[in-house]
Image (cartoon, rainbow, N blue to C red; front, side, top):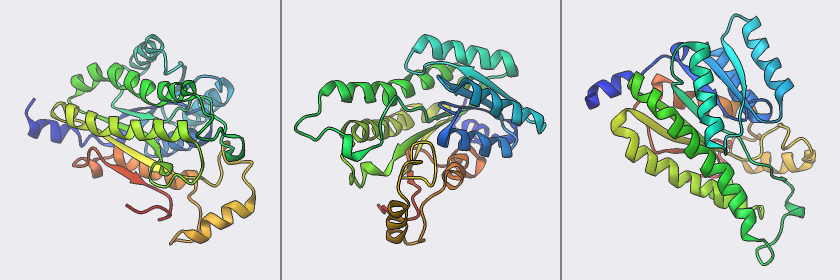
Length: 267
């Protein structure tokens, strides 16, 4: 396939796509899945523990005339990921065209309970690297045969603005997201000739998800006051940016990290 052909195939309309969102049973992953459903993309709703919520979301999409299937898989297990892609192909009769790497390995977003730099163990880092970099590696490698079949592919990795502004001592989590940003760029360079675009969307605290549900209102208000736009990003706003990177509107964009936090972090 020539570069021109790859560029053309990368402009696949959203309503012709099959989009896999990892960790889509709840939280921001669910919001991302709903945003793609609104654009009439077919959905693969990946989950590990949230079976009931994932099945309910898939049923809600189908009830509105959409296409969706919920599939359980531990994305840190390459064999489980391969089986998930095979099941998705069997369900829809075509390869996955977009992968959103959203799933997060178990992590407590509580700055007061996190281990300080002089106490944290490297095993904490390896757990987060396995969940961020390892899982993304598994999904991209499993997706590549399908991407080559259709002549294009889109990978959107979910990052964090803590990489640019590490105001909370999430040392292991932030290091893993920084590594995922590096993977985003090196994969974009390597896979570009195959028509595969790889980008990242990074957020901060969202108002509100499961992860931020215990955050005091005064913390949200403090963050809002620091943003140029005067409010904390919602899951729906964040999800819209993810959809952009799968749409034909971003067909000339790869290797980029878009920080979506109402301007809290710039540059």
